[in-house]
Length: 73
Image (cartoon, rainbow, N blue to C red; front, side, top):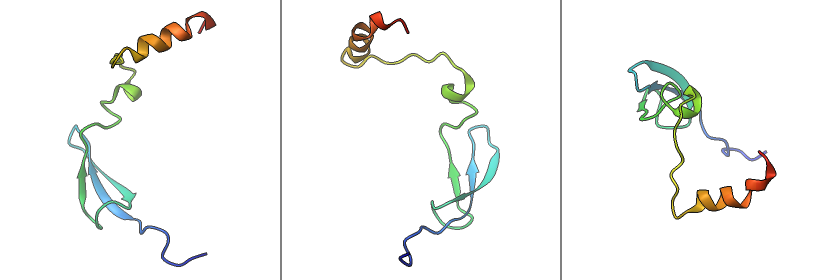
């Protein structure tokens, strides 16, 4: 195995949107740096079961729905 090919992991502080701070291992920044998140699992609709809607840019979503409408999903 080649030497010096793997990134160095260290402990950073991750500040969630609600203000809580969690210690995590990361390759980002330096030891003890703080990363502030704009979106985290406590507010993102993918994890909270939200009913977010898909934006139809250029009619792509409607083309997809029309193409696969007869499959019965």
